[in-house]
Image (cartoon, rainbow, N blue to C red; front, side, top):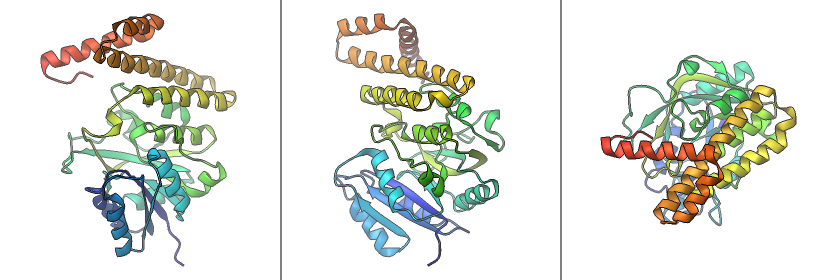
Length: 320
């Protein structure tokens, strides 16, 4: 049996209209032996029918279906269980990858011994057209190849903060490292699950390296779950953050603790903002004032963000 270099895992939910494109891009990978593992997260549409047909047409495609909707973390965990490659690559159902991307990432991982390898991305619209003229990561900090430790990973993962955000990147993971660390995605999270998965690996001693080439095509869509925050999501963030600190606080450096403290403050700010927006929509004025009085630091953020939204509407351009 020929060994598989990379298992490309794709969690899918209501993806019948576009999952074939994602799978085709993975199957078109060159100079690397792959399998594509697609797990349907109990979609109410014809997603499982589509991926089952793809599996019938190409033995490199493996499919499964969760009995109930469990979210992207549950689907990814099941896909990892079914994977047989030396490396695991993440691909979202509405995204695509360049043919030579995986071969580059595997070569870098083999050469450096890194447990996690990431590259830059290109943002595209629903028609596949590039948005803007630059890659996703634009700052000088990621203009060249480099290692990314926990401190950097946390510092460049602040919700609603302008500038580069590493949590959107789709890594390649060394399978043996995931097995050694018994790594799994947090099924309590339906947003930011990639950030916490990588953060746990880095805190546990995994090494991550970055390639500035952009071989992943990330689709920006109004329907993307990455751009719709709800209180349940920010509640889950705060819980995940607290559990992370309890587990790893004793082994963190002073600088790592400092950036985690800063991220924690930002998460509390965002949590209050989301709750305040809901209170305004539901006209719960008493709850709104009580909320604002409970955390004055978060209140300053909330009022500033609301002012920017109002100014953006007046100027007819997005400021937040």
